[in-house]
Image 1: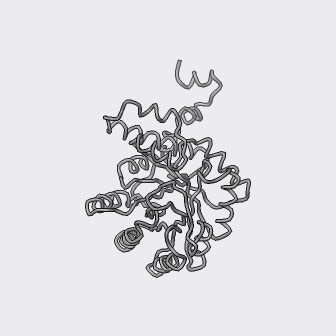
Image 2: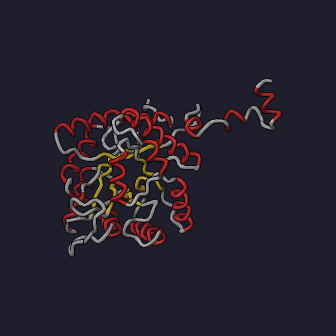
Image 3: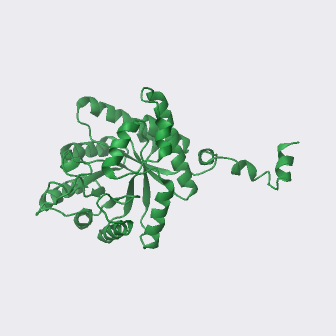
Length: 316
């Protein structure tokens, strides 16, 4: 019996069945489909060797024409000068649209405002406004300075008041470690939008169903700004477990099982990391999401491969 006859006997149309038989990754890469929009996050380098590696990563990913790229701001503002220098170099030497992270931690309002004006005067038009972590304490207890901004909402308002910026803010698909509830997190997000936020970027996550429930609640609350899923393709599961514990991200059992027994096999871990992230993005595309923010960890290989799977190609 031919394939068409088999499909007809099963009550399926031959024209429809080939598509329906594809998984989300294959559907994401079929010809004629518009690729998603992507953005990348980098961290400012600490050493000359790290700087060389970062710029190799930037040059590798630049031809993919991301919507924007962001540069992080270390705990307690510890990378303030390196962040500023990296963002300015991107602006001057690349075709990228850089966004600078900015936090409230360990700085007065006057000091933060001066940084905002510096970015404005340099031509930066996008800031990622975050409360930030205490120095050396990712996920540590935050204590605002008496003369500083208390939170990301106040910081967002300050940015919007100083210049015509895009302002991206962070959200947690799972409850923020210091929040009593998802409802509280949504109220905080609404306050950020009222203060001038134009986009939300999620912390990394692996629970797609939980993310979709969160977005549904956000939309029901009347928040309409874009929400970009934050995707972290991590091949070091031990490091991921430590990072997740610090910021309250739950890791599903299936993810740990995939990496079990591969401590001494980095090549296979990278392949698995790519497969997991590509499948997540493709599944989220099926749910209507078309923008993805990648936490690159200053490496290009995994992110480039994932973008390739999703149909993102070098700009002509």
